[in-house]
Length: 518
Image (tube, rainbow, N blue to C red; front, side, top):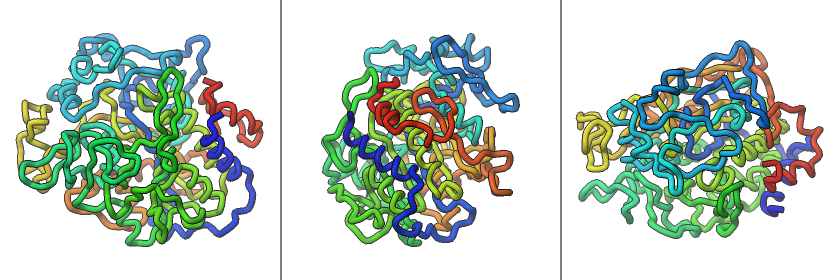
């Protein structure tokens, strides 16, 4: 039994029990909408086509959970017959079944991803990002359907999803994490080749996965963001409670193993964006002084917590207004050390528990991803930020567009938007069975926080200034979303619909955390 996960589960089950909270709910502050609590589940390395290429049509092969779409389900911009059979890439897209959940990690560097886009032709994925160690380059063309990513397809049926949302810039995990927190990757004190440094400027742009300076779990190339603010600074200025909760934050050595993978540390330093900023860092991973202090200013935890602290706070009646949730490594969906089934298990258990709390009626959850991992997607992103450095290759060698005036405040190596990724909104306020076609990016989540809690903008080149809004995915008319549903409970093993989880034997939940259901 994974003892740490059992502790997390115990806390979650306590929340689900319906027992009266020990203290009053934290004041979420004045909000521009009925949303008083926001939860962002930030997962890893998935392109939109990798998970939703054929949505809402699943193959429904024998031995796999079936998926049948509602008759009124809208289509998405996925892979049509021509793209499935006459694809311009050197390998054709192919379906990965449930037994193929574990795959290699694809190439997803800043330059690699631009080369795969090939001037917008989207035809060089096997040759550039199809670089998974031990796998054929053609694996980059693989996609899952509703027989494997069943839970996400079911959430899309009941709530809202986007088929036009992108990474803010090209590149791997840290790039996406910083764009979520600050809408900017420029302003780094560069200490390694893992980041791009503007010549002679004393600051650079993060384009790789350096680790945050002084984090006690660091093992290599360290970087600090020395310029600009993040959304945590804005929340603190307004006195709004918030926290970033990551599995394994309390214990650097803690690790687990996904099915078919090698052991992986639960806490991954370069996935924690707020650790890069001195104002919001908790470099020594100090625990909060009490559950009532979680999310609030006043102790050395400084809003950075272990995932167990989230459930401890909620169980104490203290649900922070803004919550960033990072699964332990083996459940974050990252190819190579995690997979869609382990990811599903985490997401479903988390949402089942959260929906059983008394806070659900004013809560919204956003499921988003940090980067595409280089997986094939057929949609060319709109380029809103240009760049001209030796690292760029989108439109010509050394170029992501040729207009230097389009580079925000001279902040190079921020070519974007990058690849297209899934984004879902789960809430009683979410429009039901709705597909949003408005252009958004990772910093649209940042904008949602800023607008709802009336924080203002970060400035200094942050993309929050022009990020598309997620509000078209919500409806606040009536007691529930327009045509929507209040709750959806799923089976964490199969992703299929089930009754209220109070009917489940808690020992069954415990057993499944050891991956026996997979």
